[in-house]
Length: 495
Image 1 (cartoon, rainbow, N blue to C red):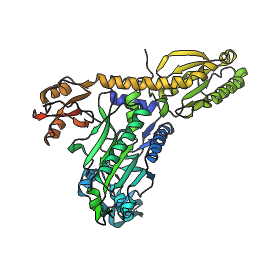
Image 2 (cartoon, helix red, strand yellow; image 1 turned 135 degrees about the vertical axis):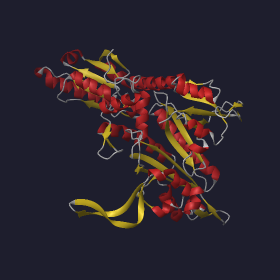
Image 3 (cartoon, rainbow, N blue to C red; image 1 turned 180 degrees about the vertical axis):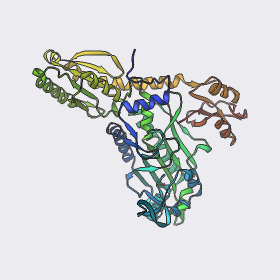
Image 4 (cartoon, rainbow, N blue to C red; image 1 turned 90 degrees about the horizontal axis):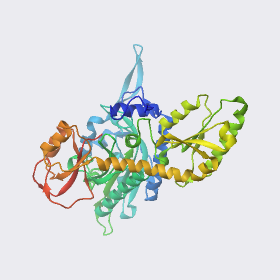
């Protein structure tokens, strides 16, 4: 069977990924190396994700705010461990104007102190928290901002790694350690609910190993997802920062006993990288496939307008059907419907929407209008075009959307289960699996926590993705060192 895309997943996954983005018209590279232009269809997907996540962030007691994109260098210097983790990725502003010299614009007006273009906001938000928090009565302070960040990227890839990307970053301060740890886990669960529930991407929640923690954190918690090439993608992280940032920024408060204590802080974030995860989890060789809760349009109606005499009648029937469909509800919202009246052939329009991942494409011609029927293509079964009465389609739409939603989730979960590798007993076996055999997937095995493990894994391009919350409780030997170990870990290649 011929597919809509020129590149197949099985032949070249990286090129296939770029092809899906191009054919779905999601984004393109900009004139600035490493940066992207998110096109309307791609941004509409991001808006769906943003709205769902923002609702849960607010429901869990957080308030949105906004902080400047520029961070004074002296603030960064207060948190050495944090800065070291981002130092090589930081963009620095050193001048405040341009002047014309010899016919060219050149920087001029050197700043007394350089400004860092926001790579993340712990330092600048910490400074504000130190001003705002005076007493235990001011706690907890729970903030979130939707913003862009800049981290110079050496190997850019649309959505996955770009020098500028969009995200939300939450920052909270608490009176006690236990309260901050509870917050850290609460927000990871928020991410899991959105990624698994709306995006239909199965995840494995767990804690990062010491070397994989967020710079300056006491603990980092993560949800890890498997893409269709067997690699891992970090789908959301939540960090317990202890008192490290509070001490650096002097976030202190008068406690109930009248003493002065440093707050415990957290931070957590999710970005446009999740659109890359969505693409690589669900798409096929015909293009993007979108879970209905993430689709900008649930149904696109393509009127067949070859006959000028019936044109107005067909368009009117399409608009009437669209109105009926919009009166239906899915995911507690009106069904999203578009009537495509562009001047192009029905086949071209149908395939364009298939490649964009629209759950249902409906064709409606003069004969359909006369018979009261529609020709229906569902995105998970495009070879199975069906003819239904309009009443049947309207009545079954919500159930069909739920069914498609389940199909995409179940397929992703089945793929992950089929590629969870067990029985790898030693580092030599691990090497054979990933290098000699060209294996992929998640290898689950014991981990001792030895600091030298990460360097050895790096030789194979592997990392410890997480120490899953769900542990077997058995004893064994560390996969890398052979030392006695009781902790289960996931070893994998990752994006």
